Image (cartoon, rainbow, N blue to C red; front, side, top):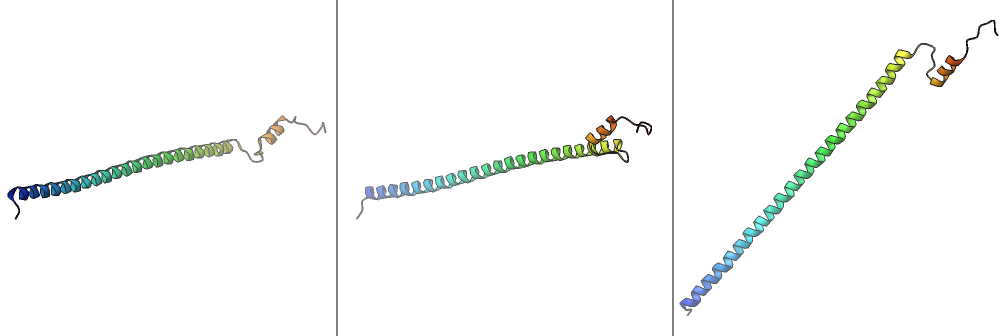
Length: 108
């Protein structure tokens, strides 16, 4: 038969072992949860950074498109204002025509 001392020792041993396992399980749950939360926060921040970079790229593209559109509009506007029927679109030809002295039919 088991004595009272040995019975109490076995009880304390089982309670200690059970408590240690429970604390270990709780620690594993907490560790896993903290890890999962940290991973989710990291992915959220990564998504925010990527969205910010995409928005910045879209703004740059829009500014470049607007500048190209403005440059094209200026060229078209200049052509509409200065072009006359019969004018050459090539600047060097137009300048050469302007530089030629006018000759009358008498000098030929």
